[in-house]
Amino acid sequence: MKHRIVVLDDEESLIKWVSYALEQKGYDVFATTEPDEALAYLKNEKVDCVISDMRMPQINGFEFLKSVRTMYPVLPVIFITAYGSMESAIAAMRDGVSDYILKPFGTEELLLRVRANIGKVKKQTGQIIGTSRPMKSVLALVDKVAQTDTTVLLLGESGTGKELIARQIHHSSNRAQHNFVTISCAAVPETLLESELFGYKRGAFTGATTDKQGLFKVADRGTFFLDEIGDAPMTIQMKLLRLLEEKEIVPLGSTRPLHVDVRLIAATNKDLTNEVSAGRFREDLYYRLNVIPLLLPPLRKRSEDIPALAHHFLKAICAHERLGEKKFSKNTLEKLKTYRWPGNVRELKHTVERAAILSSSYYIKPEHLGLEPEILSHGLGHIQDQEIKRVLKECGGNVTRAAEILGVGRATLYRKLKKQKPIKKKPNTKRKQKRSK
Ligand SMILES: Nc1ncnc2c1ncn2[C@@H]1O[C@H](COP(=O)(O)OP(=O)(O)OP(=O)(O)O)[C@@H](O)[C@H]1O
Ligand SMILES: [Mg+2]
Image 1 (tube, rainbow, N blue to C red):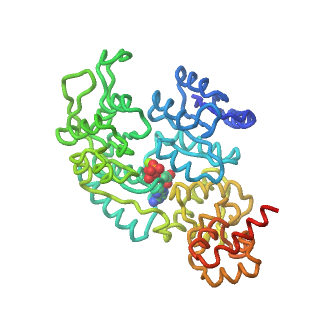
Image 2: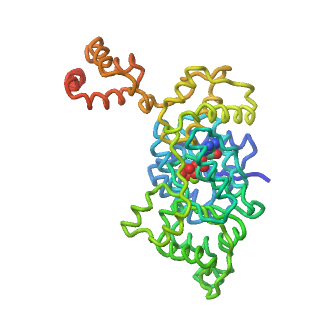
Image 3: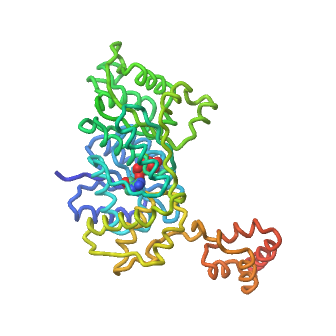
């Protein structure tokens, strides 16, 4: 059976080559520059994956995503985002986008992301890499809680592995032979979220022409992973509390509660205590959820894990794409270790996959990584103020030139200079003078 993909972008030439590339590989493609057309198509056809630009003249990607999610809460949606805008890619993940592709991208990367996301729906669990101290304690705790039925609250930045850990807990528990079901509260509008989670009776509202089983029932005897629980509306919070306390749900339009036996794993990027004080999150639910909090540390706080993770992703992508054997050069590994990774493990994985695909040589060199230099974390950390002064003097105060010599991004150097008041003025005024010429 052919997988069907919807492609939406305002750039005619982009959708042309993307469609061509996908069709060559046997996908059925519906490509358009019009968001309305894409939505109309989605309404009528069964689609396996959506690829959409994030910035379009008629509508922004997030609005488009919301409309897609209204129809399909869990359909893979991949955003195309401009190169260098990691921050928006991270925000997109939080809003329930399944994945992102950074522009510019090639055929191989496109196909890779499509395959990965269509496959994700069936995905079991991947190997968890990490021997740093924080990861060791996370994994020890995972082993322990897997043997129990307690609720687990996963905390941590985007891309730190919350879903991976949730799957791991499920698969090492005695619920493994039953379903693992997941949905994100941030991605789905309130009314839809309620009917998806709890199900409904025929006639419960206009359009409810048959009974529908809720996802909690689908997860019966298995595990439910509720992502972005910090975004759950009050009505849902109340029903979740009942689920946790009484082990029952009431489908919309029904008066008869149904017994369900699920282990709940919740995750959030938000600080729930804040949400509680702001009155947006029920305190009783918070305590119910927070039985076992599990914090996944950001990648920059466990850089010891980076080489093992990078090698793991490199090996996997080389095998998967039949690229032969590849290695990181020494400089590349060094760069991977010192980068800040705002998108955490997910960003590392993408970066490695991309580099492996882009480099035609045996060694992957730093320039293949395409990382933004200004985010290099240690960037200036280990460079002494005196050295900066010396280099700046040598270049006659030219910050761009000095940044090159110091091997850091210009933005990083500016940030640093801001903190060192005395020498800040000089290079800045020089720059301005230069500009106004
Ligand atoms: N320790 C790890 N070992 C191997 N792969 C990992 C590890 N942590 C994360 N990954 C991989 O990184 C990617 C992102 O992980 P995951 O989706 O679990 O993150 P997340 O915390 O749920 O992110 P978000 O908050 O954005 O949803 C996945 O492809 C996952 O398999
Ligand atoms: Mg996740």
